[in-house]
Image (cartoon, rainbow, N blue to C red; front, side):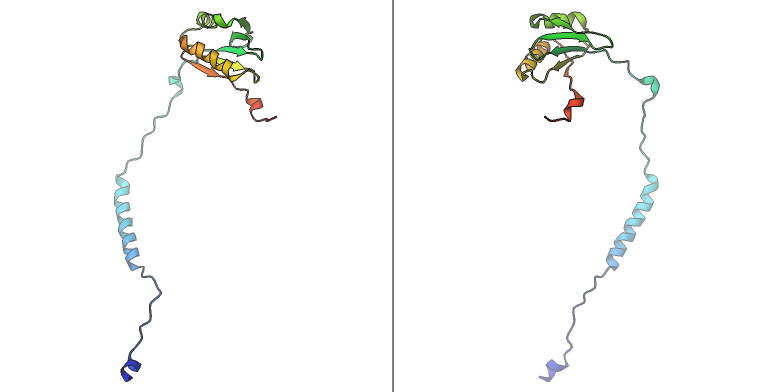
Length: 144
């Protein structure tokens, strides 16, 4: 039993040996210091004022009121809506616009979705490539 009494008990060490971490950090620091001057900064080409594209064409606005009746106008200052028959809508739009002229649809909130989609489908199948919807942004945030 005397041999057990003379034996030293080893205590566990609670400290983290950070020396290997410092060595790795110094190696990485040297690598970054050597490679940083070799990296060329990216070149950014900013647009200049002289290369601005031409002013976009004024769109044609097709309006659908709450009764489902159609009217259209060239969307520019002072232009007024003129009534259009649903059967003649495509002919009227084609007569007023070039193929690149955008057409936008504004519909009353009480118009059924199906009616708006029928007008969109009629214009799209008639060869109008640029077609969009107008949204009343002032009323978009208010919920009743």
